[in-house]
Amino acid sequence: MELETSEPKDKREQAEKIKSSIRLLEKELEQIQENCIHTEYELKNCQTANSGFNLRRVCKTCTKEIGFPTQEEIKQWTEN
Image (spheres, rainbow, N blue to C red):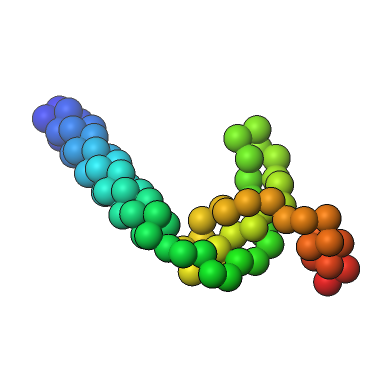
């Protein structure tokens, strides 16, 4: 019976370590994106909070969403 109680504890510790690593990596990515000058971008479909997708400008260097495309950019993107 001891194995049954120790296994969930091990899983919980493992899950907490993973969550902590994710938080640290998210902070690192945020710093990279804040320091990027976003000289080149591409258009990508990006997921929204409501599980939909919007076409956005995304920096080629740091992958940050940096804005919305113009109507001309959308037209060129749909033609490709």
